[in-house]
Image (spheres, rainbow, N blue to C red):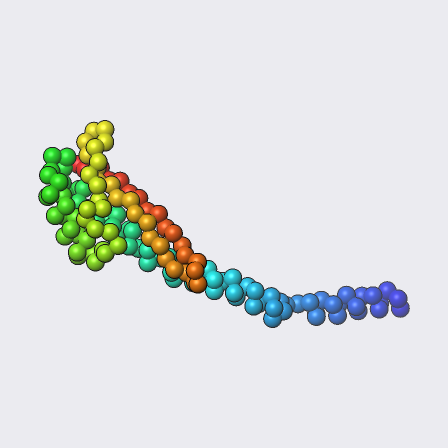
Length: 131
C-alpha cells in the first residue's frame, strides 16, 4: 500500500505542475514586448543608414577619382533628395584621400528617445572608394 500511495502522489504532482503560472507568462511577455519596442524604435534609424549607404555607393560607382568635389556633392544631393534623407547634409559626406585614389566617407550619430530620459545613441560610419 505504501508504494502505491507514493506513486499516486507523483502522478498528482505532475498534473498540477504541467504549465506556467500567470506571473511566468507576464514576465515572458514583458521581455518580448520590450525587445519588440526596441526594434520598432531602432529599425528606422538602421533603414535610413542603409539608404545613405546605398546612395553613397551609387555615387561612387557613377564617378571616378578625377571627378570634381562639386560634381560629387551635386550627385549626392540628388540621391539624398530622392531618398528623403534629412538626418545628414551633403557637407557631412567627406571626400578623403586614400591609397590608390579617393573615397567618400560619412560618419554620424543618431540619438533616439526610448522612454523618459533614456536614449539610445547609434553611431554610423561608412567609407566607399571611388572608381
